[in-house]
Length: 153
Image 1 (cartoon, rainbow, N blue to C red):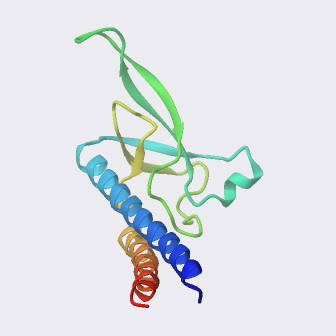
Image 2: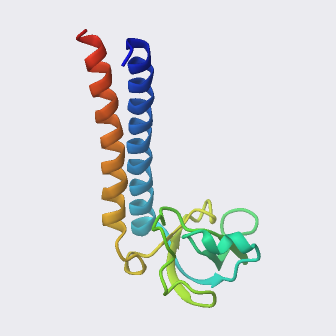
């Protein structure tokens, strides 16, 4: 392989692998924080209006939040939110997430569209996180090896 091609290829692979690892770490941290400190709620899986929406592994969820109206100590009113959960990355939608099913979620009260499925609702989230991290580490290692091979020539 030519040095220029190896350098560019190694840099692209290393950059992609590093970005994937950072993304995985940020998503895991966000999900963990929301599950521990977020507001619990029960959401309903909504039927997709788009024919291609069923192909998305993350279901469309609908739930109500309490939003403050006015300043501190003011009255609270309900706000309906429709969103997809963060960090849901299996290839196929699990059979328990069919339209009309109720699932437990946790959301950020400041950003109600930032929602995650409760820990009991996710089957193999840790395995999926490990697979994404391994993919990122593999790309990073391949890029570093290509860059090292160019540097030792």
